[in-house]
Length: 231
Image 1 (cartoon, rainbow, N blue to C red):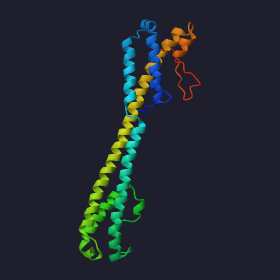
Image 2 (tube, helix red, strand yellow):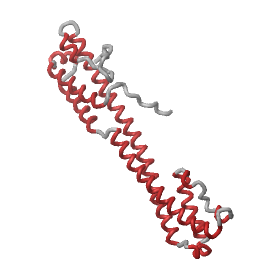
Image 3 (spheres, one colour):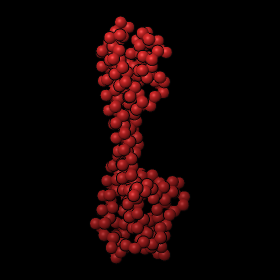
Image 4 (cartoon, rainbow, N blue to C red):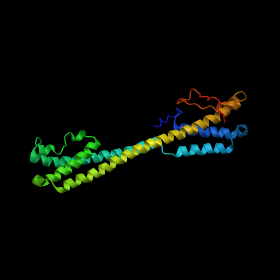
């Protein structure tokens, strides 16, 4: 059965989750005596703080995106080099056969600039095979074995970058999911603890009550007061 997509439980930023969490822990430590009867010990507070610090230190999606973008740029640059190398060969083929003969068409380089990465890779390898087949006939037109070797090298490098990009995309998906799950765990624990804080001070101390309100909105205008949770 396919795992359902992980959805964030909070609408504010991860940075806000970190700062809010540390703020609430500070209030809980101030009011530690009041939390003790509910089983919320100093050890549990420290455990939450440790989780928040670990969450804060994990790679963010911005970093993962930039890492992915770097590989994408390298892949695209290599694709351009491969196209140039293929066109260099095809210029010699055109001199020999023109563009309408079957021997020219056998190279299969039509719409080269519009080909997908996978199609371009296949085209590059095909140009090497067909170029090797016709090398003797095309030598007088300037085709060399070194040109074909260059294309083979570029194809291998291009294929590696394609795979690297796929890996980066997969890694980013995994990191995103893990980060959302970690954030949700922190948020749920935070709501559980602050709900106790709200119940403690609801009728006796407005200032302390407000210390435990979590605003689950971007603009912080509407407070989210969780339903009472069991400890």
